[in-house]
Image (cartoon, rainbow, N blue to C red; front, side, top):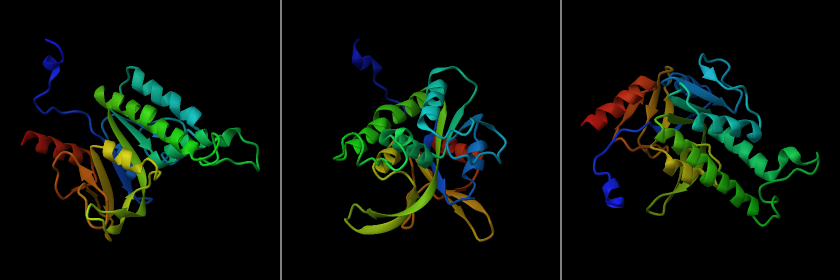
Length: 238
């Protein structure tokens, strides 16, 4: 029957993939650790205080990549892969592309100066994201494993569709690939901490911050993995 026999006409449930961001101490790692059978990929050395399965601290891209390959290509009991944090993972890729770990002291490299200069290193860096990192994450999602990227928050100027420049809070992701990773994500959730210490997860864009979800979830949720999954389930059941 050819390719037409593979057309998909009904919505279906797949493992969530997205970004959770917030300031230090907001509860990002705790949220990731509360996910369904999680494994934390520790790129930041900040997960020691949580009780869940986690890798050793991975300080170089050469340490991180084998772990990603392992969880993406082997059978294991983890239902969620949590990257803590995506901003530090991207820094390790940047260091790898720039040759930081292979350069003598006093001769430090940057993306702009690496691979012959003229911005070639920046393109090599982007290729790591487009050709390796996001496909690995999608392989996990397609196998039924959720992918949660934890990120710190930052403030950046954003040009709206109307051409107005505004400053918003958003995930602290390398500017060269931030748009691509945000577009890849099914959800981008911002953690808001009230003056009383209550934490909520915002999944809709506001004038102050970047957020989104492809599930139709409106408003905010308690900062809780069960609350998040329940909201997804309820929207998909409508």
